[in-house]
Length: 52
Image (cartoon, rainbow, N blue to C red):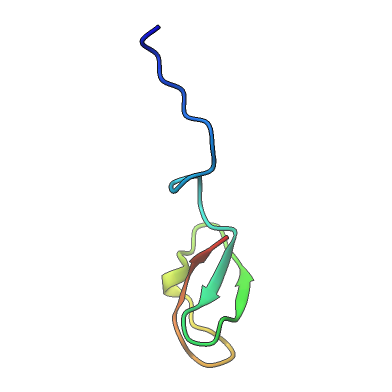
């Protein structure tokens, strides 16, 4: 008793698997060690954000 266990896939469940463009919705696989926000969309030139 006294121990808490977290079960589920809530926020903070790991890094994103894909990067998604904020403007047009284009998705590309996440590159390890390269944050999505540092990547430019090849379709429209918008900024990516992390998505699952």
